[in-house]
Amino acid sequence: MSEIKILNGNAAIAWAVKQINPDVVAAYPITPSTSIVEHIAKYVADGVMTTEFVTPESEHSAMSMCVGASTGGARVFTATASQGLALMFEILYIAASLRLPIVAGIANRSLSAPINIHGDHSDVMAGRDTGWIQIHSENSQEAYDNIIQAFRIGEHKDVSTPVMVTMDGFILSHALQDVVVEEDEKVKNFVGERDPLYTALDVDHPITVGPIDFTDYYFEHKRSQMVGMENAPRVIKEVGEEFKKEFGREYGFIELYKMEDAEIAIVVLGSTAGTTKIVVDELRNKGKKVGLVKMRVYRPFPSREIVDALSNLKAVAILDRAMSPGALGGPLFTDVRSSLYESDKKPILVNYIYGLGGRDIAPKHIEEVYSRLEKIAATGKRGELLSYINLRE
Amino acid sequence: MKKIGWKDLPPGAINPWPGNFQEVKTGSYRGGLKPIFYEEHCIHCLFCWVFCPDNAIIVEDGKMKGINYDYCKGCGICTVECPTDPKSLVLEKEETEL
Image (tube, rainbow over all chains, first blue to last red; front, side, top):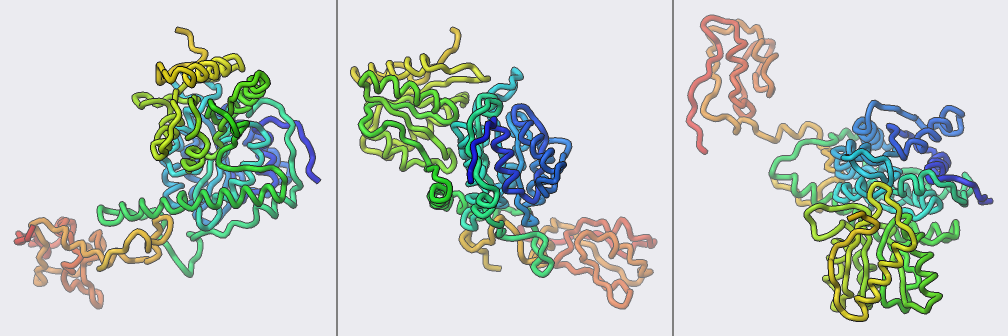
């Protein structure tokens, strides 16, 4: 039987990893993801997990060890955040390029400077071109469920690509919530065994991993590496459907909240989607036709789903918890706007940057966004393309 | 050697053909200098064979026999390491087509 536990996001992720019992966990602790690794260390010390738990001297080494173990055919997990993810950067590309289905739990945190330990999406948004699949979580339940699905998605032979499962640092990583945890056996059966695309430990079929390419082959290799990402949407959908059949909770690329007859909407990812749902409910009670599009899968970017969800709306606000200095707007905004170029009908779009370094975003701030969208929808006049929420002038 | 297209490459940029660098004729790297072997001075110490980074020294029955110019990059390490006086290996000018 499944049971309800009171867990914070880090404990929820560690619980899933405990049940999956990967062959190798190599991780270096960093706030706010530290307790994921602490829980795993304890499970290993207590003999609850049989995982080879490695504590290297940096995140760069942690990800390098993950790559090494994964080329050997091992199932591998790591956890990090912020500067730790940034230090992993060159190896993130290598993991994806070698098509290694490593799963990483990320407790999103801002990047220095100034140094700040609180939640925003600067770390993972910087990683959006590394070739990793990115799945975002609204709450601890989703973090738990997403980790279980991440192994299935990443390790599928047609995908064989690493997966980041993210949750907002502190807001989710350290906040206690009800989490339905499933039976160990059921989780183990759902995840199954890893059947690697290749292994560096087969002496009968020796291979070179990470050879040099000159001008004659690099381009072909890079193109071939995209195959996993191209197959990912189909597999993410299949795994989501199977997860629903097995455990009853439904997951797609995006979640549509009260969008059936909506005229204006907010697009957001992470925990702020939860806050936005409360505001949508309140405004719906007042008869306003408002909705929410919550992004779950950010890479591969679900362009078709976004077009279907937004094309017929009058005005849409995209909320980014990261900056992309010098770009038109935040990363989510430019992706959404670019997707809508394929559509004949387009809503008026505005972009907001919010919540950097853990700055609060409260229901009243989201109400203000909807109220502006209402005015834009009524007048057809957009005003500023990029604005900031809860920022002192 | 026919080049493989991206759809037929093995996944993850692995190389499942061990030793296939043999197919790369590094001799084409030489840029105007090549070592010439003067057998009459050679004492067959095989220093050249030990130091050659491209396995381009041909040895038969423990004797230095010459240079495999398919792979010799003309780096000249053998000519430096050769202990005989006069040298048994000397870098000399080579006409190359660019």
